[in-house]
Amino acid sequence: MSWKDIFQMSRQVQNFDRLLADQSQYAVTMVGLLKAYVENGSDETKQRQIAEQASDLEHAGDRARITIVEQLYHTFVTPFDREDINDLSQALDDIVDYAENSSHLSP
Image (cartoon, rainbow, N blue to C red; front, top):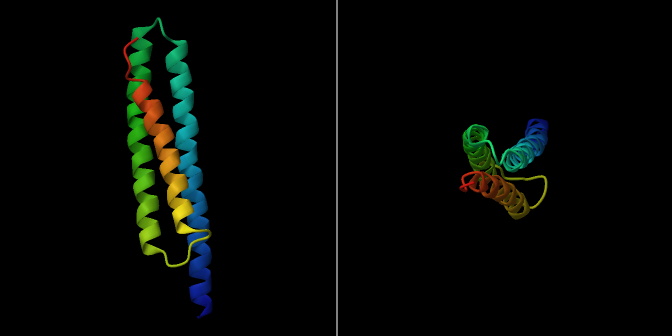
């Protein structure tokens, strides 16, 4: 194993950290949108705007999930168990999906 290989593995570790942090930020933002949606229960116009934002954010979250899955597929050595990375990413995606689905419920 050369130094180049070691540095490449180091970058992959940092990449997973960044990708998971980005995906978790989508979940935090989405939960904030859901909170705003509930708080604006009497303003249907505002709720529609929030639902549109939630839909856009959900698509961005899906792209983040796809990126992580692709990165797992192409990475030989992961910073921790690849199944754990996948499970964490899936759980974060579920949070985003559930919150987005909740914003499409009738007031």
